[in-house]
Length: 403
Image (cartoon, rainbow, N blue to C red; front, side, top):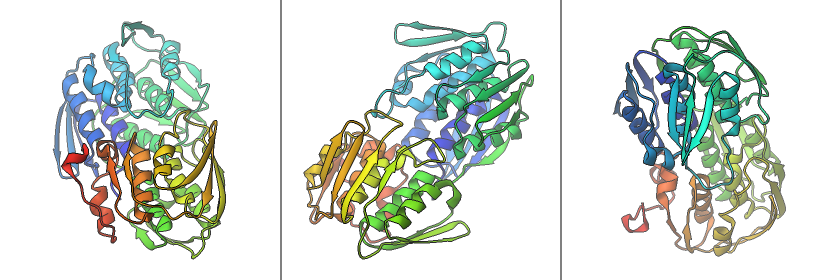
């Protein structure tokens, strides 16, 4: 599997806390990584990218982020914590990214304010200042937000005194950020648990680091085996990172075999329906929700899925219906009735994971399906068509289809 998008982007932002040359390995070649590289360069860092290796040289920085780049990718807001800690100020445009519902920044900003920063909204730009430097605080997050946990953790690394983050998110990517910060010289403990403690230090250095495998990419390919009635193996993964998905696949009748860093899945002759709820880690990940709904179209009976993380993540449902899927939505719950023989249609991907779900559904459909909006898929999947093509799928990228 490729390196994890949601780890690589945060490690790149965390590098702004240090000094020197960082070397990252297993960096995915996706558009979000290229966008973050441009953000870092506009802030004063030097970034070079060769194959799956990246070098980031950090010395002097400035704290005003480029508006268009930030608006194209929400993860760029992760530079706020490092810049506020390093420079005492940061000015960032309100971030963009996937249109999957309200993703408020108040949890991030509240954490910064509790650490002594002032935050004001100037038009469509956020300005945060801590001229005397950040100070440690005891912070309880109202929701275990991944981005806020990481942003506050990074800011606290250079703050005076001790910061305690309670109700922290527990995702594997946060454990990776902690390991990266520790390798730079930070004193951060507890990642992967609900309480993270950070003892601020005066300065941080640089390090070499390898990006963890992408658990969402791995899950997407495992579901591709399932929806097509096939079988296959994903390699170079950490199976414990997506055990909730493996449990659901087994409940659907799939055969799962785990051997070290390899996971194999074989689809049953008859897929069972499922009922699940998305939740923060270690619960079922919201980033695999659209792909699960696509897979449910081939299950025998009624499947039900409730989304609790994002409030507008079912925009792709109308596209699945164009293929013939029987999906009924009530609020934040969808019910899928199957199995249905899907038939090719012209579809549009509205966001990253929805695009992946439409590709999975198209693999199970009769005839040809055209999916526009491939640029969304490219934000998080490296060479998706080549990897699936190597498994027997017939996928062609058409320049006329908008990316």
